[in-house]
Image: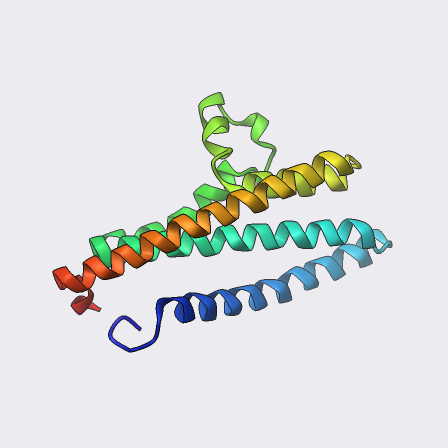
Length: 171
């Protein structure tokens, strides 16, 4: 896409829609399995879980833009980051266990990422603390928007710089 007339926003929107749709398919399969296993529908909870999923997806899109920026500006040396980063983020953001189990320094870092708030918000909602869950989900959404704005600017600058320096010619 770097050598075509396509605008950056169309590339990001297309990749984001594809990721969102494939993620939603997996989400609804898991949600259906949960409903079958536990025997109830969780309709109210599901709307909050779906919103939490949306916040995590926004964070994933921002991460993808960050990694793409590094590829364009630094080259393929940074390719490994695209495979390592999701695993690191799952640990830091509390996917496997609450972030309270992390060392205090990592807990502080984890609050920089929207997925931390989204995952904690979903956990709060499922545990019955609806107002705390709503607050965490809203904070996660706002942090996701801030990340999207920042990393879209970063990606645009990286592409402009890559065209000037010839780094994009490597692709």
